[in-house]
Image (cartoon, rainbow, N blue to C red; front, side, top):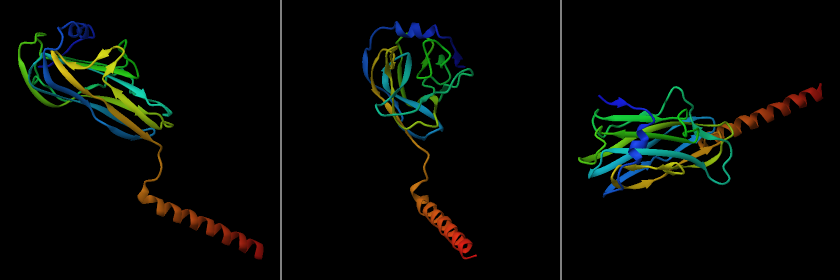
Length: 206
């Protein structure tokens, strides 16, 4: 069974030897939200028969110039970073690093998964989702936030493997009627204006 380990384990992962191979990637999905809505940032991973013992993920939310409001990871406790896929089929260890674990915060979260040996001695083939990081947008949020996997606190990678990183974006828009509802909205407004005019005329005639 997969077991959960504490924040000290991330230091072990960081001390492993530099990348030895290629053909591995980590990708953040692009998502769109309306202001005030929750969402989930999902990180996908792929490794093609490369020798690795684990994967380390750091995700940071960075607003682009001109963005307003706040997009941040939902607070912990409880920890709500979720394991979405298991490269080692319920073996080994994993840990989620949420907002309540220093130095993680409302804009920086993390996740580590490993086969339990901490040695790069077995090849792995995997492609699919790895972890989900719940987020929320403030009611006045509008703009684009980058989800970066290279941060001031470190980067993301499959251990012992050169890893290509594909960052993602969060696009937040204000809550406005969808294009298909604009016609109905305009018609209702026009009817309301017309009804008001009729009532005023009748009042003047009386």
